[in-house]
Image (cartoon, rainbow, N blue to C red; front, side, top):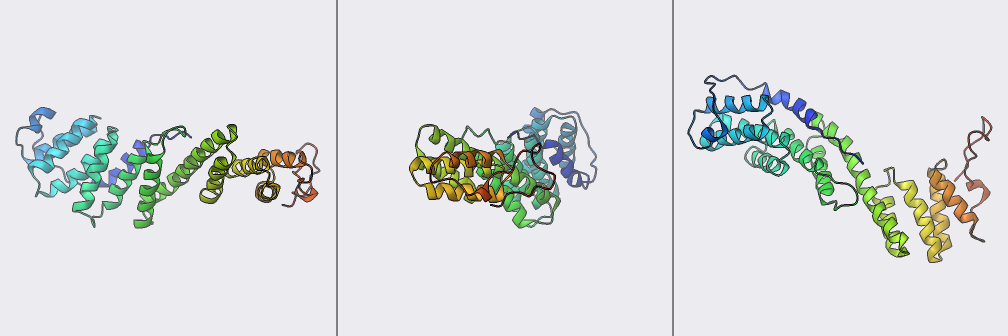
Length: 285
C-alpha cells in the first residue's frame, strides 16, 4: 500500500500556529554556525529561524529554533520555538528528532492549546516511516498507537479527523502483513501456522480489504488439515458477507471439488452479470 507523504497537510495545519506569532524586529543575515555558538537576542534568532523555514531550509531552521530554546529557555519564544523545531525536523524528514521535540513540548506544556498538533506530529513521524509489508512492521504499530492516542485525547480536532483516515490505512497495511506471512506458510504446507495468521486478519482487522481473501485461505487450509466442517464454516461466512467476490467464487469451487463437503445450493455464488437476469437476487449465505 503506498503511503503518500503528508508534509503539505502538516504545513497547512501549522498555519494557525505560525501566524499567531507577532512579528519581531532585528532581522539579520546569519548562518547556522553563527547562531549555534554566538549569543543572539531572541527576536533575531526567532526571525532568522522563520526566514530559513520560509526558504525551505528545514534542517537549518530546526537548529536555530533549538538555539532559541537553548539561549532563552525562560522566554515565551522558547515554547513556540519547541513546536516550530518539531515541525521543521518533520519537514526535513528527521522523524526521530521531530518526535523528540514534540514529546519535549508535551512534557513541559501538556495543557497547551497546541498540544493536539504536537501529538499529530508524533503520529505523522511514525506514519511516514511505514515500510512495505515484506519488512518489519514495528513502526506501523507505533503509528497506529500514536494516531489512536490523538483521536482519544482530542476527538473533535481537525488533526483527529485526518488521524481517523490514516488509522484505516495503517490497519489495512498491518492486515496485509499478516496475509503475506500466512501465504508464506501456506506455500510451505505449514497449515497451522498459516491458519493463525489468517484468523488474526479476521479477528483483528475484519473491516479491512483483506478479510475476504483471509476467509478463502482459511477454507483451503482447513481442507488441507482434514477438518471440513471448519472449511465449510469459513466458506459460509465468506458467502454471507462477500458473495460477489472472486474469493467466494474460489472457495465455492474448492468446496464443490471435495466429496461430502460441498456447500448447499443456497450458498452458490451469483452468476456473472452477463448471464444473470436483471432481477436476480443475491444468493443467501
